[in-house]
Amino acid sequence: MKFKKLITFLFLIILISGLQGNGLNASEKNFNPAPFPESQFLEVDNINYHYRLWEPAEEIRGKVLLLHGFAGSTYSWRNNVKDLKNAGYQVIALDLPGFGYTDRVKGLNHSQLLQAERIWNLLAKLESEEIVEQNKDWHLIGHSYGGGTAAATAYYNQSRVNSLILIAGALNVEERFDTVLLEIEPLQQLAKPLIRNILFSEPVFARLLAFIYGENILDHDLEMLIKPLQIPGTEDVLIDIASTFQDLPESKFTDINLPILLIWGEEDKSISTPPEEGQRLYDIHDNAKLVYIEKASHFPMESHPDRVNSILIDWLNTK
Image 1 (cartoon, one colour):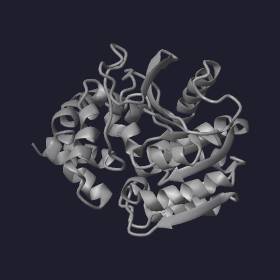
Image 2: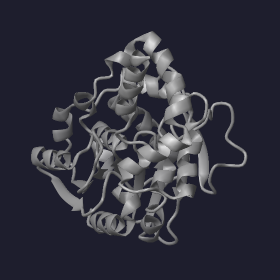
Image 3: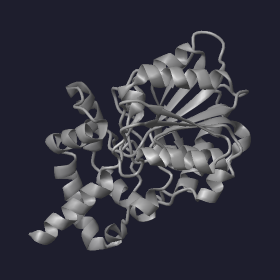
């Protein structure tokens, strides 16, 4: 019993850094009805991606790609897309593999550089099929785990990126977490029902989110966040992430020759992105700008959208 409690505790600690809702087995269907009015699906690299697209009413000023955090989804950006669209930007919010309504592919390697390669393959297809504007480069915005993905994506193809924006960007995950236990097959099998039946149960998940958000969240938001996380196969993806994840090496982050905006909550309680991590990234990159959001925790784009949206649009309009 003590051993089981220890494993439960370890796994909760591993996952507590950036929780938010996610996905189904999109390889079987494209969901009817669609999850959201803007939902679209596109298969690339044998992965059926779910994304949402918003078009500005007038001329496109630029393209924005939004990448959610760990266990997040396109719903993570619900308070931001309208302002970005109204400011003239074509906006894509993407569900990363295993999250939201994108495929759960068992055995997929989730290192950030491989993730970046897959994302560029997706963006190339979106452009070649004229789903998005072809003559504009990208602004990449990533939150938490998705911030590391955004940084790797920027590094992988800098010539196609105008700027990089990290909101509580998690670029130092491997150093902060030891997931070696979850590379052991019997412990993986033990962890899966814990994820399914305990971690993603509504009472436990609501408490975890309240801790990370710094406040209780609305019932509707909780429902939208937890619903896709309860889809079969999500637990396998989380195990795959624990066993295959690799950060973008710091030397490659400092080699990104692009303007970088760092947005951080002053009261971020996440293990992976404490407020001092924003200062550390600012200190090691010559092209970075750092903005702290007062009284914000790990999800400033959700808890303080007016402030964050204003910062984002001011930044985008000058890049």
